Amino acid sequence: MRRLIALAVSALLLLPAAAFAGATVSLRADPSDADGIVTLGDLFDGAGSASGVRVAARTGTSVVLDATAVQILARRNGLDWDNANRLRRIIVRPGVAEPAAVARGKSVQALAYARNVATGEEIRPEDLVWTRAVAAPADAVRDADGAIGMVARRPLREGALVSARDVSAPVVIQAGDLVTVTYQAGGVSLELQVKALGAGAVGQVIPLQNLSSRKTLQAVVTGPGQAMTGPDAPTGQALAATRIAHR
Image (cartoon, rainbow, N blue to C red; front, side, top):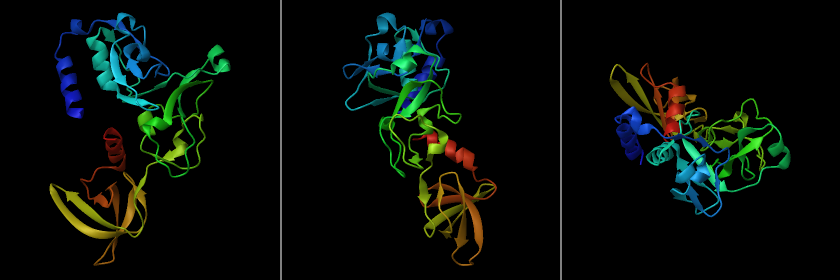
């Protein structure tokens, strides 16, 4: 799927600028459909004659769309959406009326929880919904990808706005686990079985113990039972970005 999207984007980039000319549209604040069929009109304000173009079917409480694929489909139908916020996913739900107080006053678009989430539960796409609020938290999560796949650090209430302090990356290595650590330097790669002395999520640095020498080393967690160290090892920030991109 990712390869098809990448090829489609590359093909679009080869077209002359005039090929992209079309009606400028903006993504609706809280995309929703009324009958289980998501159309361009459900996603965009000002879709005009392209409003009835089918995008996807919603078989459950929500459907998650790839933003790049939606952008390509929109352009094919004469609509120009610039995706200025660089969204990766678009969550579409059944239509829900906004509270009257918010609808009448000034409001902002924000992510909220669609259900109660218990401590330690993983946040899934269907657990999030775009809504309107009078104000968003200072650490509000601006993109659904910033929350999907993370786990709740505390009980989260349905309707509450999503903030970065609500969630954390899932722990993939526990203290006492046997870990394969890879040492990378100058094109040389060596692997060693070690024991984890602490727990960690992807991108975090944890202490590990050599089973033979009993010496302690630090390494970046790269996945379940996997870690990496050495001058050529990726940074925790780079690994976290890779994890988000491939969810």
